[in-house]
Image 1: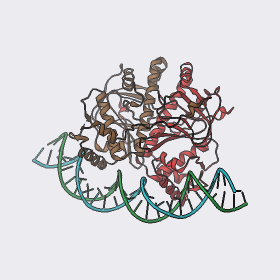
Image 2: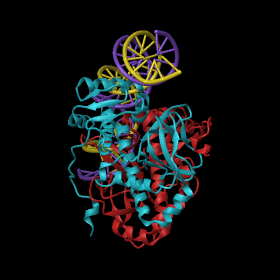
Image 3: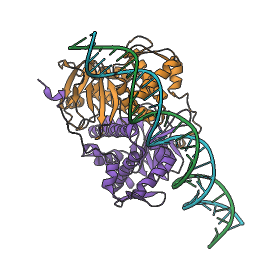
Image 4: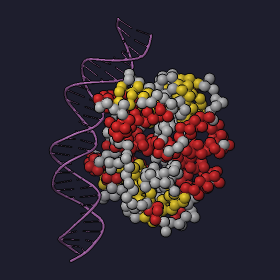
Length: 245
Length: 245
DNA sequence: CGCAATATTGATTTGTTTCAAGTACAGTGG
DNA sequence: CCACTGTACTTGAAACAAATCAATATTGCG
């Protein structure tokens, strides 16, 4: 079965462990049957009672939140190896919509919680996973809060690139199964601005467009610079934390 | 994927428990001595090794992330009852700066982790706490991604109002220990825009300014409407999740 | 009181959105 | 195989919200 290519989005922030964490998280689904869903289907709706956790075996989903007037925010994308549901309390925080063709497994929250009481190793995996989610969300808040369109797109492409390469994808190629509109809703931009920004970066030879669903990164260093990846600031003072008496 | 309001703003999403969670979490600090810090001091720096967790007993802090070019994002505010550090892996994700005068307690991550292995109830508190952080971060992403200045400020004031009232503060009054600049960095706006927006809401009699550090909410319903608080969307279809064969 | 920090208000600029065409492309059926 | 159709994407021009630049007002404080 496919369980062996399960692994989680490698999260750079903490060095270490994340990728292997995910393998482990996916593993608790191993007895579950594979299910399928096609483009446009919705695994679960924001606000519904959160009965299940899902493990994505293949394909891509978008994670959406809607405002009452129809505005949509995409708070993330899911792909093979990702597990979704660990962060839900009694209700789903967002909807999960299928982008292409998805193969997935599910398990009830109930049995997940049983596993959790039984397996101590699973507990630390879950903690680690939740901490990664918090960290990733922080990054996204920084992006949405103060980055320009070019910085946002550059950040996004780099993240996708690194994820893809970590998965063993071809070097320098970013796969983009989602539409420009999806990317816009993820980056807090309109479709038009995403399109124009792609054109700009392309004009500066940082990237090259390869059809609708792929972009080649020509100059990763320059792209990283464009993304505003902090060299770093030097700590000019010590934290109160260090002055312990 | 999410980030945080580290403070545990009571999060409405899941009904229940958040405020009391925080109280409970604070309890594990009970043996720790009280420490003090004054305006401008920094409890810990983003990027430093995360050695401690902190429990805020009194006063206010801002939680900041900096970009290399000096742009600042405030991802949350901390106040009495809040515990910060549960979401850190090996490094602090952000800096914590004192706004006014703060009384706090600390405990090493190490001993926190020991407590965690010993106390099963603590484990579910921590999980719950992390899930609230994820939820709060999601909300902030929605705000930053697609709300106008007026909606952002209205959302912020409402959140502060509800938190304050839940803490037993005076009805209708929002306390704002932070500067307009802080509010701007939290909402992804400039100082000037925050100021102008306050003036606008004030002109429409939704709020009344009471000195620098307080605002009275005159019409909570209208303010909630201005905040874009979703009436609700009706689920027009069932999730794939429901169609299980 | 008088200074420095914070906040407000005004005028102008700018990046992004909005509105409006127009183009490329995948899928369908003839 | 190709024309037809609908969707996604790109590009341009105009409108707009918020940022920026600049000045003034208010507040807290030594």
